[in-house]
Image 1 (cartoon, rainbow, N blue to C red):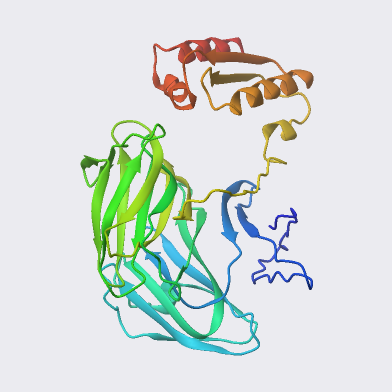
Image 2 (image 1 turned 45 degrees about the vertical axis):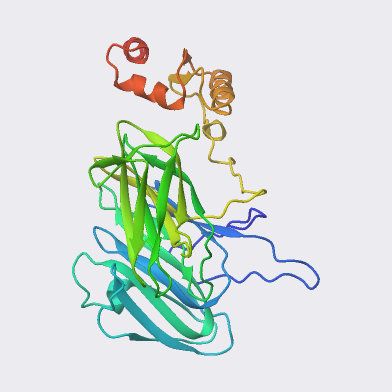
Amino acid sequence: MLSSGRHVHGQNAPQVGYAVLTSDAGTPVPVSAELLSYTNSSGVLLSQAAVGSVEPIRSGRIFVDEVGTRTAIALANPSSQVAAGTWILRNDSGAQVGAPVPLALGARQHLAVYVSQLFSNRPANFRGSLTFESNQPLAAVTLRESTNAQGEPLYTTMPVIDLGSLTGSQPVVFPQIAAGDGYATQLILINSGSETLRGRVRFVAPDGQPLPLRLQGSSVSEFAYQIGGDAIYRADLDSVPGLAVGYAVVVPDAGSRAPSGIVTYQFKSGEQITETSVAATPATTAARIFVDYAGASPIANIKGTPPPFFLTWGSEDFPHLIPQAKRMAAALGAAGGTVDQLELTGCNHFTASYEGGNAEGRWVGRAVEWMRRQ
């Protein structure tokens, strides 16, 4: 999906490949992205994963996680020359696993392959990295596959580290982390070079204060890292207690490069429901994002006379959510529906959700009363 808002729909049989965006002479190439969606046979949207457009590179590295998931990589060779090179698998300590596997990709061809297909004799529950090296620049993206409680696939994309462009010594930022109440964050640091990287990771709350999170059973608001050559480091973060949100900053020691970073957000309710991954970013003074409410908003999907609704929000909720809730109530009423509304005085977005777990709280009593009337 590009910034112009164009959509590409598949046929009954799966269609795979790649797209090349070429600007007219004298005009710049727009920043672009695509959104991969997976819908089951009942028409239920299970997963969406965004992929930013990429520049082809000659060598790249991806994080591989085979513990309850499968990792795949997709390559495209947009050139008119055959690409030849190697695949190299390394464990999380950076040690090579098995012999390199030849890589060959014809001119303008595409390849999507699971790591398990390239290295069938890898250790069970493998975690580490996969590196490709090519004599022609290749466009690449990582895809991680997990499953929900029904055994249906969930997909998230992960960035590919360009080994031809080593990171600098400036701090890098994960602008969002969330942990607790079903949410979990995996912080993945990747060493793209041969020297050992050292530094600290700091967790910061929305008010700028240290954010305590649980890491390996201990409550920490920062920790030191040391990542050997070609190695990776993964931190699984939980909250102490309840839901905690904020951001993380990776600060390399003096004389050390910053590692490349990926953060994966997960939400589980017993079983995994969804996950998504983003790369660490440098701070910026100006940015632009794509916003899409069309079709996604419930207001756009009111069909016929709606059933009864009970809408709740906090008086201190996110500023955009309160008017959205009121517009939704108005739209339901205009369609002939009945709507009960409850504003939880003094609650923000998160503390309002906690009311649902308080049997003596304001929300539970009103909700029970509302259900009895139906």
